Image 1 (cartoon, rainbow, N blue to C red):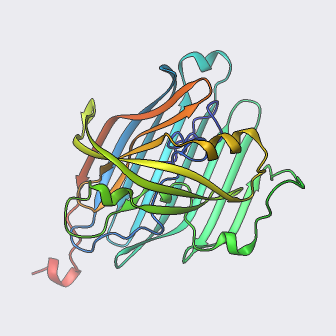
Image 2 (image 1 turned 90 degrees about the horizontal axis):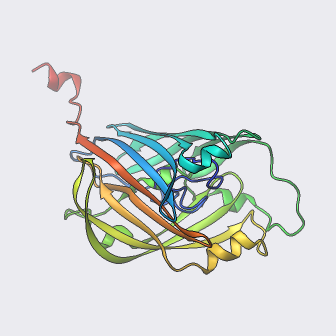
Length: 292
């Protein structure tokens, strides 16, 4: 999922965050990228609806180079929600490309929902959180499952989690794209996204990609930083109809969310691309080779 922050529909409406938190954090554990023709760009635009009613719009850009990657997202509430709020947010993730691996190094987000501003910054190294800055901090709660140092290791940030590499040499848009569990740390909570294959579909964006997508079922598994008895947590844990539709970034073996659907008590929340334009970037030649 891109981690589009669409305030007013939950703190992380990033792939509608991979639901607030869950919908967009969907992806690879330091997902690897193939070494040949492994560079590409994505320029995507999304709309968010709840029970068919527009509630937000967002943009997501991703650039995967030969030695680094960057992903940036922006979102805002729209439609009926503007009557109640004028929220907006942005986020960015950066990292290194080393051999066949994407290695996150930093993630930052800011969300303004009129009533308060939330800011988050995570610095990472080799899959471990080295620095964490968060305002406002989580309020103390004796019912909250404690976060330990172990929960900050072997994880990805919410946006890097939206870049999913598929191993092998065949079409990356395949059932294998869905067969994984993603360990996510979002600054406040450590959770897994357990994914499994459901079916194949075909999509046609208003601009850009037209072709197959792999549809994955997603199960939210909270591990720490949460209050188990909180109604929203219990609801998400019980859901078996969370879906993410994965489409490819040209020039890479990386697939990313094209559509995310999240059941809610008042209707299904959907984040779907209206524009999904990706292009391959030719590998950069070493100076000596380029001069020949």
